[in-house]
Length: 411
Image (cartoon, rainbow, N blue to C red; front, side):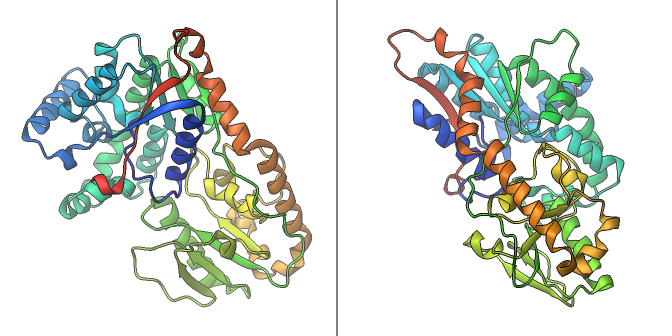
C-alpha cells in the first residue's frame, strides 16, 4: 500500500487508510514503509529514468499516467523491493494505482508474493468527468510536494491537456494493476462493477468493495430548536470548491432564514454572503453535527463514497444531497436524495419539513449502524485477505504485511 498521502491529519481518505492500518495491525505484524515521489527525491538519475520510461510508454501506445510517473522513482522502488524481499513479507498492500512502477518491479523480483492494491475509487472515471465537462484541475493532496510554479502550470494552462491525458492513460493503468494484483479493493460496489466491465471477459482479477467504517456517535435528532445547514470540506479539493460556490450562490439568491455554516480550512478569500458563516477547522465534530444540523452536499461527480455523508449520519444528522452524493451507499428510497432543482423549498422553509429531516436522520443513522460499523469493516478486510492464511508456513503465527506509511514529518 504505497501511501502517497499524509495520513496524520486523519481526514477524508487519510482517515480510512488509518482504519485499514489499525485493523491489519490487530492480528498481523505490520511494517510501515514509505515511497517518496520524484519531487521529493530530486534525483537526477531517477528523473532521467522516469523520462525514459514515460517516452517508451508513449512509443508502445500505453502511456503512463502522470500520477503514476510522479511515484516512479527507480531508486525508491528498488529500495522498497529490497526491503520487502529481505523482510520475507507474506503480503504487500499497495495504495492506489499510482504505485504502478513499484507493482511492476515487485512482480519481476518477487513473482509469487501476494499483493493487495487498494484503488480507493476509479481515478480514470474522475478525470474523464473533468475532461468531458471542461472543469478545472486541482492537484489536491499531491500539491504539497509541488513547486508553486509547477502547481500553477498544472492547474492553469495545462489543466485541460492533463485531464484528457490522465483520463485515457489511467484506464490502462487500472487494468494493468487489476491483472497484476492478487486482490483489488475499491470503496464502492458500483465502481467495482465498472472496473470489471473494463477488463477482458476472461480476467481472473479478484475484486472486493469495502466501504469506509463509521462508528455511531450520537442518536438521530428528531426535534430541534432551530435548523442549521452545514457544509464540511476544504476548497483545496475541486468537489468541495464547486459545492461551496453553488451553496453561496443559493444563499445570495434565495436568502434562506437558516444560516449556512461552512467548516474546514479554506485557501480562497472568504466571500461575504448574507446568512453564511465561515467556521474554519472544527476540532470537535460534535459542534458541527449538533442537533438541528443538516449537511448539504451538491456533489459535483459520482465516484467512490462520500465519507462526509456517513459521518453526518453517524452523528444522527440528515444529509440533503444529489444522486452523486449517495453513490456507493446502498440506502434505498432515502427521502433527501434529490436533484438541486428541488432544494429551494427545503432551504427557505426548513421548519415546515421537520418530519422529513427526522425521517432522513433516522434512516441514515440506522444504515451506518447496520452496514458501516468498524467491526463489519474489519471483517470485510479479514475476509478479503484471509484466503492467503492457509498458504503460510505452519510455524508462522502471524502474517506480516508491508504497508507504506506516508508522514508529513518525513517529507
